[in-house]
Amino acid sequence: MSRKRVLIVDDDEYFVEALQLGFAKTDFDVMLASNGEKALQFLGKSEPIDLVLSDFMMPEMNGIELVRQLKANVKLRDTPVLMMSSNTEREFRDRALELGVTAFLLKTEGADVIAEKAIEILGSQAPVVSNSQTQPASTAQVQAMQQSLLSLIRLTAQMDGLPIQARSALIAAEKLAESLFAVVPESR
Image (cartoon, rainbow, N blue to C red; front, side, top):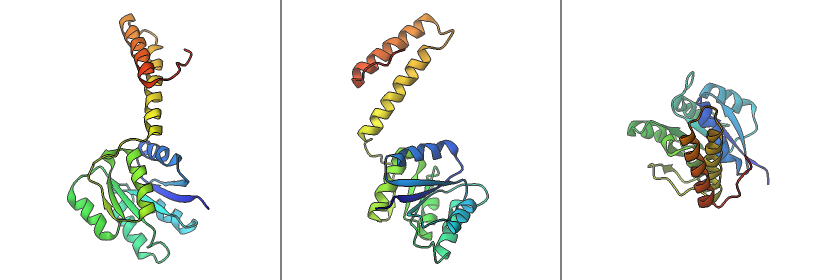
């Protein structure tokens, strides 16, 4: 079975990186474009894509115009497109759905939730409108967050010029986090 391919179209580098992490645990190859114009150029030269995950607001060509052009192209019109935006106004969502997007997802739910929903939607192909109700995080996500928290505590505790009370509080927080997360402490 060949790997599935997703094209993420968004100009927010940090959000794209977080989305990539969400897809990392799947069978997807992730391609990137920073706006609709670059996405169309890529799609015109690329092997077929299984899913386009596009932001609504971008420079040069926004997500709505991208969807219009995809739906007008015989080769690309059946490609599922998931639109995402931080804008919660109904008119944005309705406009995207009228143009034929498979789903409208709110960026406020977080990149990991959007990636999970995108993977789920691709599997079911059922139109969905996200309503900001988040699903429970997977065990792997929780473990990753726990490790990130511990790393942040450990790095902060090693900062030069940190008052002794702050360093003591960070060490206590590290010990508490280790016991709560039941992890083996890393050497400092």
